[in-house]
Image (cartoon, rainbow, N blue to C red; front, side, top):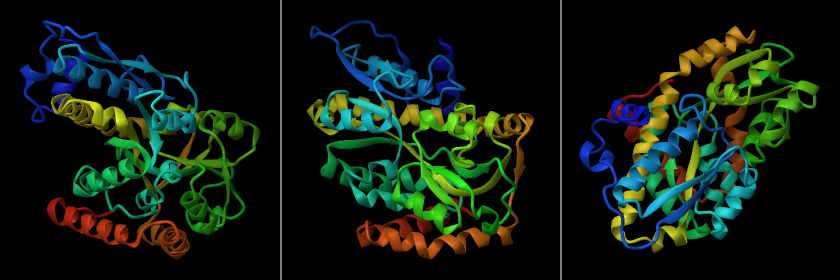
Length: 353
């Protein structure tokens, strides 16, 4: 059994029948093997340090086993086919079938209401966030995005909370944000959040961020610990404040026309592959978060956790300005749906910040 298979068994033992999923492909369909192009901006070769590599490896094992080798992934890592924006467009147009790494806000141009999940300080815990996005609410939102855009979200990946890092000073309250230049993704909600906290929001592409921090084009950025290490940003940052303002929720999505063109049986295999890859990727990230924070600290970054009183200042500073922006872009029904989903998840599993 491969190391990937062992990892899958360890992280999601109850999610599948071992024999059905991991049995070797013994025969091939008479039809030619169909290549599913899957492009990312992530690295390859290490399932711990390259999370989407782990996702694609596990997805492909399940896919090939479940379709007797009729489908297989061809993975294009390291931005080989373009940046996140380009990969999104290529997937929507059917040039490639799948991509990963985009956050919900980056699909706002395709379906504006998806930005509801980008509201800061919304999810009280990682567990609640995962329950919401992998439950009925997440499925309803995926269906709405697919109908509007031709892109179907096949995996929501609530992986870790995003927090602010910078090179100027420790951030303990919103007052400490004043005057800082913070890199954000080109998402209206992110811009509104940073500006509500008194900083200057500067959209910069991921591939340009390291140099922008190194040369002082921006003072800081906001990312989860594993993302900071993925981009080696700990080398060019001095302070990291764990304010947990956004649940980092990258997506994996598939061209809707391709997906609907699959047989019912093959769609079920794709869905199962996505579920198992999701469980495993999130398990890897969760298992190493403490280690990730230690690596960031060992690199010389000063890490600070706000007190409850300080945390509340961030919440209050962003609530109204960001809500106002969202109400102009998001259908009202989604506010109620998200509130209800969070309350239900908290009631079932408990969830406090």
